[in-house]
Length: 363
Image (tube, rainbow, N blue to C red; front, side):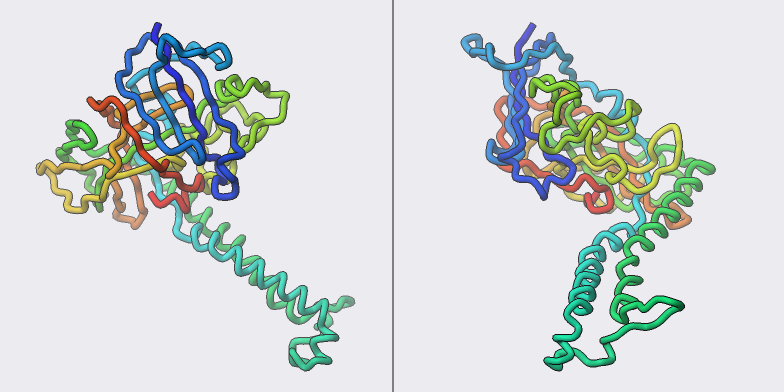
């Protein structure tokens, strides 16, 4: 058995609202039969980071949790289920809805403040009498400003409802008329792949392709084990209480983002919307796609390790296609790619993190 040490501080669902320093570092030693020559560190100890290296024989492991785990270079089953095939892009209205929340809330609060200080503002001649007073509707009086601002305050909710209905319609259309997978030959190399399109579905237009790499959410039970916590104790920062057993997306094992990570999804054998990888880096989009021609997709500017999978630290590579169906539906096609690397010590100074919400994840 070979001992590897893994350290990770993975960004929570709302990472922008949290100081990384206050999120505990998960540190474990894994006994595995798999030989991994690559050692790497992504990010730094003062922020979000992940580290993977072999333990030296002289290393004192008496204070670190030891986990019997499998380390492999083969894509894990849950990633094959949640990040493989065609996915429907969320409706653009979701992003519009989210951007309008802040201004509409500010407008409502200002309306309440103006109404509360109305007599003083009138006496100082700051506001006109046309803004003051109330409208009588039935037996009750309603402030004039609130009658105008409250419907505006409801706009993000209404927009979100419309977007969800449009998403469900697109998902139903896909279920009733599924799309076959494009036939592609892939040849992988260090930090790049060569692809050749053999065939593309007739009702789909490929807009572009790129190679991307990221890290999946660590497995919840091993996170708790490393932190020496049980399910009955208070979770660490960034985690919630235990979620339902059924795994819907990669965020569920961490216990965050359920119900918010993605818009409404149809009950289907697999989720039809692509979950956001909170740690993701990518190469550039290549837009000139032709059947029969071989193209090269380069990885990110930062050189990443090859494919590595364990319960805590994963390096997951994938080919992503941006496409449009003839009915106007925006689609993404994902295929996991097994990548190798000959480099031993890889250092990436800053971990590339993004939102856990797919409408703002910028896929």
